[in-house]
Length: 462
Image (tube, rainbow, N blue to C red; front, top):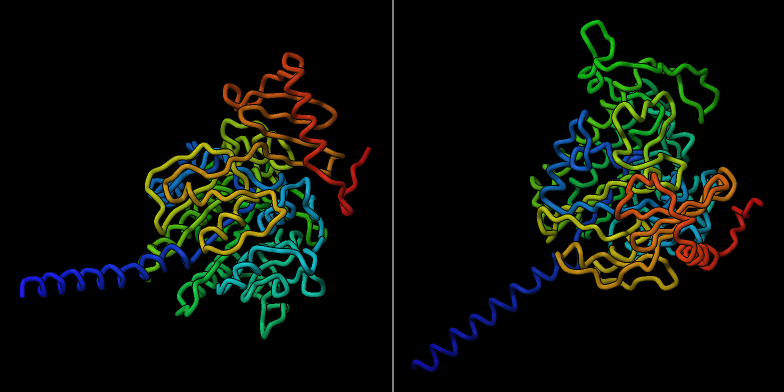
């Protein structure tokens, strides 16, 4: 009888263990994923990355409850190629899109939303797409998005007040009427939150491409009031009121309070992150959802923004359109699911690593012939399995600029100059060591030559 009872207890225990395992496995194999990308947010614009004037309590808390990446890089120093690198896992030496412009993703490319779709995910994107329009191969519904609402092009996204956005309706991307007196960011945000609130039979992948704090410098009015005096003037010193006649969709309208608007945009964005985290907890999704926050490139210095006023690039040199650290090193925070709390990683990574990381997280096949590596192990509190030998960028707007990071070394060929920096002792890239270490320069120049192929869209300008 005792043996029978013992066998029964053992059998009961095994049943409990077996029945418990699928639940745990579901959390690890089919997590929801939310990827948030701000637009032109600098490395120094967030409190946990050193910002002193502006307060970002929700992003700081997200970092304290997750992992903060100190050495994370954008795909490029401007919008479109950086987003292309995110979608394809390719760095700028192999990317089809290597600069800004209305260039669509090609029809048969392996892109992140398609991969998520093929592995049983509902995919949704809200904000700035910038990689194709309704009439070409890059249209969102043709690139794996089930739902989309936002801006199709970079130029259109310069306008927070617009009479239309674009949306997927009945399987096609069509013009979506907007009240031109309504700021687009809060509207798009609510649509993204509505998507999360849906009862999803399948796991979901949400790409929230926030259009702030990109120029033009107009924050949502309700938040802007916090940064105005009773007479309507800015609480900050406004050294450079920006005055320009608006011409077409690509220019920025005049703005007399750019500093107040910059502060309000970052404030509003941070509050939305807090609302997102609260919503996930309310819906019980926080334990089964990964949330990532980053920026598409370094801070801009356009539309009246006084980048130095808020020290937007922190201790880094340069800003948007530079291949110095300030143009390409960006904040990156990971939160949720089984991510350990309060961790910091100094592993050099880039946004072309996101695609293979996500395929690892959902246990899907990773495409071959990409440049990215997975950092899924870091998200589990473990050592990364594979490290980058180097990171590579090139930029074509001002001729042909290149940069390589290999370990502590960074080589920049920009505006006709060759500069070598030791990032371990000179993060601000102040001391050019090229003459002192010619062998290192030669090694890095060889990487620049061998890590790229000629581009059809962006031929090298001699």
